[in-house]
Length: 341
Image 1: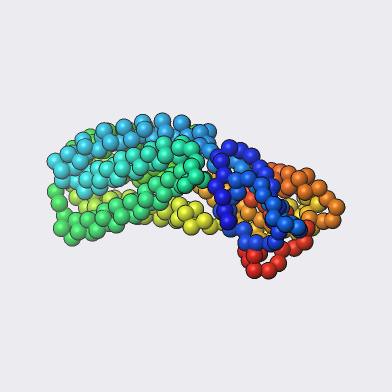
Image 2: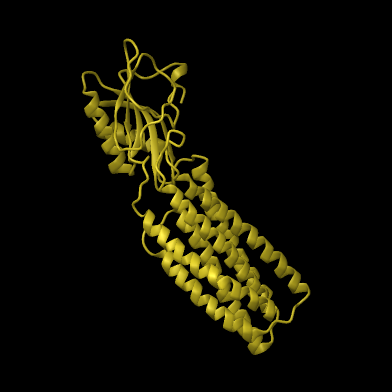
C-alpha cells in the first residue's frame, strides 16, 4: 500500500516479507519490516518539492508576453473590422487565444511553485503539462476556424482596405517579435514551448497580414487575404498537433523520449557489478523534463545492499538524467502474483 512521503530530497529503504506488486507511483514514508526474508526498496527522491529553479524566470517571461499580447489584441481586432481583413481578424482572434494561453501558462507556473501535500504528494507540476495540452487543442480549433472562413471568402470575396491592414500588421509584427524574444530566451519547458508556439503562430499571422495588405494595397489582389490566412492556419495545425501530442504523452505516463527500458536495465547490469539482473523497469515523467523510473534489481551473493543501491542511483542520474527512482532490491529474482509488472 503506497504512502505519501515528504517533499524533501532523501532516500531510504524498506524490508518486506514477500514479493509484491510495485506500482509506478508507489512511494513510502518511513521504513518498516515484516517477518523474515525481505525485498529492500530504495527511493531516490529529487523531485517532490517546489523546484523553483527556472520557475521565476518562466513566470516573468510569461507575464511580459501576456501584457504585450493582450494589450495589442484589441487594437488589431478593431483594425480588422474597419479594414474588413480576415488576416487581421484571424490574427486578432489568435492573439485572444494567445492571451488566454499565456494566462493559463502563467497560472500553471505559479501553481507548480506550491509545495507537495499529502493529497498531492508529487506537487502541482502537472498543471504546466495540462496547460500545454489545452494550448495545443486551442491552436487546432483556431486553425480549423480560420480555414473555414478562408474557404468562404475564396468563394465570396470581401473588399479589404490594404493600407489599414499594412499599418496594423506592422505594429502587430513588432509586438509579436518582442513577445517571441522574451519567451525564447533561457530555459524552456513544455508549458513555455506551448505558449511560444501560440506566439510563433501569431507572428506568422502578422507576416501574412502584412503581405496580404501590401498585395491588396499595391495590386488590388483581394484573394491574397484568405489565401495567406489559410497558409498560416495550416502551419498552426502542425504546431498545435505537436504540442498537444507531447503533452498527452506525458499525461498518459508514456515512456519519456530518449529513455528505453531495456537500455536502462542493460546499463545498470553492465556498470554495477553487484547487480545480477534488472527487471520490471517502468519509465514515465512528471513533466517533460522530470523523468521517473521504478525497477527491481536482483543482487549477487554477499554484496552490500546500500552500496548497490547508491551505485544504481548514480548510474540512473549520470547515464539517463534520472534523479527520482524507486528501486526494489532483491536477493533472488522476484516471482509470483505480487511481482506482476
